[in-house]
Length: 355
Image (cartoon, rainbow, N blue to C red; front, side, top):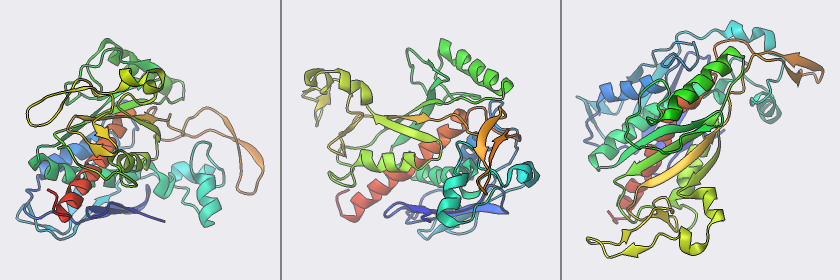
């Protein structure tokens, strides 16, 4: 099982949903970066269980304990190790269904691959695993902040309701972390109604990265959009991604979708951003914009058809502390994976002496 991502800035994570702790090692992190633990705590607060009324009722403080790589509040250039303790896990919630495959979960595929699975909340396949991503991403953001690069994400659609006119003015407020709009309250109501019905809903998160210089990314296998897609698609709840005009570009002619240019101050001035800030896998200096599809949380209390590990037909209702929508808590996870990817690309450029 691979638990690492990145070429120079490498995050390796470990731990299960109901284990003693989760944690990670961030290797290749530059020295001399001030480590703002209050900022890391604020990032973790956005993702942690119990942080929003629209999420799970499991309540974890998700305090990040840094074990190495930081001295007197500054990164030393050595590997940064950290752990996040599990304090309120309730394994008994899963004892009644430990021999059943939950629809929409990785129960069956984990058993098929490894011959064993952790039924306690899905173990390694649980969304709890993303706490380590947010911790690593917070550190990457501290590095990118010094480089003038900012990453923000927000919910733009939920349960079939989509913001018609997105006003991008982050940071976006809890509980949904969505841009201000008439549709925001409708989306919140849709999530609350799903919870009342024992159901769940999915939606779309948009992410924008500003301050990236032209020339980041490689033109073939390590395209900037390809590596961003890899990182973001590795989040368990993500089922799709598009950059810039994305699938809408299929409805346009080439002249309509091309970002035409005029003379600018030192580099071309793009008159639109249908490319989403990336051309040929390389950043063009415009904001990098992508959107991700988040599936409905698979744990629902409505009765569903399934089979037992021994192959018998049965039914299943999943009870416990589950999110009626993972959207709000997925926002900082999307940002974190984007931050780790951009930071890694920047360090690769420097390794080759190009920055």
